[in-house]
Image (cartoon, rainbow, N blue to C red; front, side, top):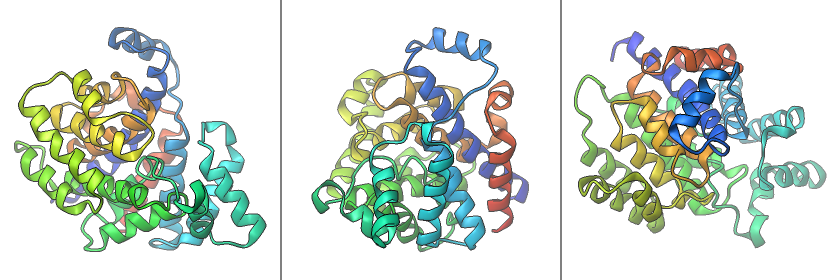
Length: 307
């Protein structure tokens, strides 16, 4: 793959994820496409949530450590949370940060104590994993690295598996050329084979049938789920990408306009679509409105230059 094309994909993934997040957050208030588009035209800035704040933290840690260092990652997440606690964090990460600080447990050990020792199977690790999907896109250790990146806040096997599957979707998108038709069936098969939990495997198997039968996105969302649980949201994000793989805009609109955990659905779908289509596929005026755009672009470029 040409270096310029790969650079575009890294930028598209990071900016696409942040925009999907910001637009999804907006869609909680403006739930219909036309009203959302109208607000997009009016607003001077698109604000992101904890989804992007944590993706930024993961990128910063990978760049600083030259790879994955779990203690550095946990500390980076904690420091960024303390600077911007208003980003909309769920209850889990702050509990992990406090426990690790007060007890001397590692972040991964603290994360394991959540939910009666089961750990979280929310989508919070998948929503932020795009930088790991980019950095390890050609690595045979992708599953291990993505799963480890999840473990500092999401210790449940499903939470880690979801992050790994999302990272794999990003890596596949980076490796595929948008100039050719997307091989949806083999894309899904790769994800099904990559997943290690039965819950995710079963949901991923449903996606192809839902697309083939041309069921409406709203009905597909009901089948696949759209909650904060990773096996009830990640599959619909992947569905949104596959159904609208030629258009970043329509992919994100599909992900965020069918209810549920809209900002995280947008972040996950936007990351995959941006990694596939590249930065040029994302409307310029959307990009210009994204807060901290230059910083996010800079992180994407640093990740690209490390490859």
